[in-house]
Image (tube, rainbow, N blue to C red; front, side, top):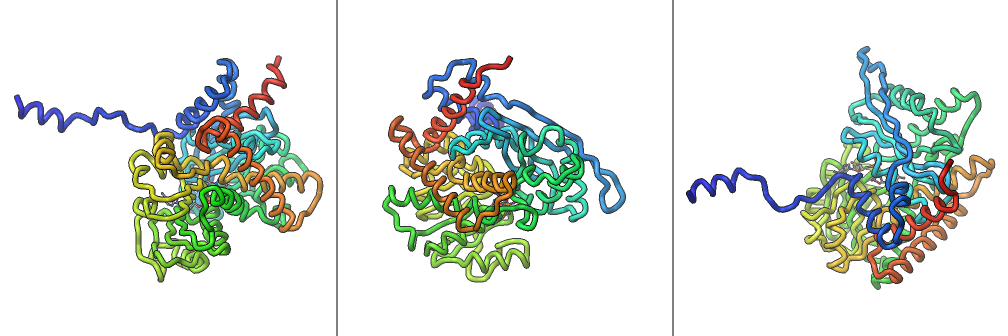
Length: 432
Ligand code: NAD
């Protein structure tokens, strides 16, 4: 009998409840917590937690070898009560509709957190851009744009770069849209090349906004940024520029990583050298001056500031207990699960949630759109000053909300953002 039960126990899956890592359900859990604090009525909750519009399209393109391949793409508009939908386009093999729905919802709460007149949207294509030629990427982007064209536009929904898309991708979207509608429409995308109506400062904006709010958090945690130790997971647009800007403030970047792994040196790494090494070899792994470290071990290094800047679910119940940072600044979207949030809060780790910490990108996207719509050209200094003012105002609003409701910074940001969208929705009323 003992043998039988032992065998049974071994072959049965663990009965402990596993953590839900579905990003869409996570985004709804985060919303529900705020809705409860705000005592929203059931009808309004349904309106705010449901995506307004979902479009799924087939994207057939001719590959370089002459064969035809059909990709799947999505565009989701979560909420447009406060203005046109706004949000990035992601090209990645693991894109799913649920991921895009989560990212669209997070955009709606993010634009409300920094109080810019946009709603939230997001797009994605299931593809592996690292294995595609520039020509294939261009044909896929143009066909995707053409398929979602009825729902995008400067007054409807304005895409921007996200994981594995860049200013060139935005230029193709802008050109395809403009050729179809018959006039040049600069405001249909943001994150464009500077020569095509892009804003000075947009490329660095996500990282710079993250730095702005970390500076505020450092004041509260009494950490001197000069000499503070920083770990960055994800060495792309957000992460690599964050590493550079934190170094400019004399912080010490002790570890960096990308999808292939990381490098670590407790005496400090030079992000500019890492950038050059990655441009040559495709990864930061193996760069001189650092020892190899896995992405898992990197997250649990002892440091003052941890910046997850890659993908969702980096900090989960599996590793939250081992996180040793004093501040976690979410440059990525959705890097921490709700269960991990609870652990970090219990450990008194100051969390700067994604909808605040990486909102610098959408803030300067808004500035780019304003410049495009009005034909302005702002200097980089002006953009950075406006960005800093917006980020510091948003930090103060979120921090004040956290004190008022006695909640951690993520819940505070959600209470603030959901409250703003709820107000706009109620004052508009229900059509018809
Ligand atoms: P990117 O494509 O420029 O860079 C992504 C980086 O992450 C790459 O270096 C890649 O190698 C690395 N990476 C991928 N998988 C990884 C893994 N499992 N472990 C470690 N590293 C991994 O993308 P990005 O624009 O910098 O976006 C990164 C995150 O920041 C995303 O969550 C995105 O939604 C968020 N974000 C970006 C912006 C923006 O303006 N670009 C704005 C707000 C939020």
